[in-house]
Length: 278
Ligand SMILES: [Zn+2]
Image (tube, rainbow, N blue to C red):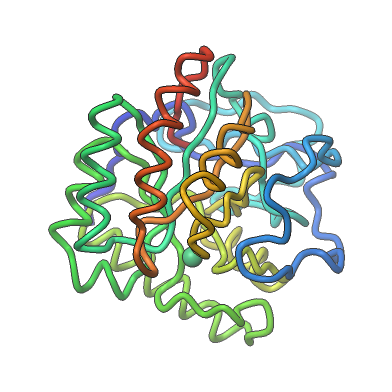
């Protein structure tokens, strides 16, 4: 299988973990929160987190650090919480970066409209896609990758109960989507998002085992619930440097999301923010 990076993603070829802080610890009770998160915009005062850094593929020799001793070649160390801000990734995003993440596609109605809108504003985004839909819409999946967006794993069937599933079942969800995405696009996903943001120790361990970083979000407009264009717009406009914004191009009628983004993207750009793919 040919492995290649989609455009604009070379900044983080892959990631490995710095630090004992990255060790596996028990999850807090908030780890398996309900679908879509519980607040419109999460507190910016995030708790300090394990800091994922580089994973030495395919080129550079990693600079050894005293902490790197805990790193096993070819394997990430499981984080105890998913990444919510660009500042938690390394190398760090350039100043004034913001990330748009788009979940639950590819969808034949909404994904093409989303791709057109992103192209119009020269935005590179990150798509968390569902394996079953990749199988159904391989051409559309390739179109996302070919446009230079980051392609990521959002499981094979989008099980909302993933945080309570057995290791065997979670592994199947991850591996099937992974193989399908890699076969169709040639891209090996480096990032994983759990359906509904439902994480468990098992999910986090398996994500690391498959060389991916777990990604959450800091800004949730709850667009999946169709709360109105104004609501989505206001929530997204609270986005600032280093934030990861969540929205959707699948799972139902996404016209509100698209309408909101049509004004949100240029407004955030006017504030000097640049949209980056993970
Ligand atoms: Zn989802």
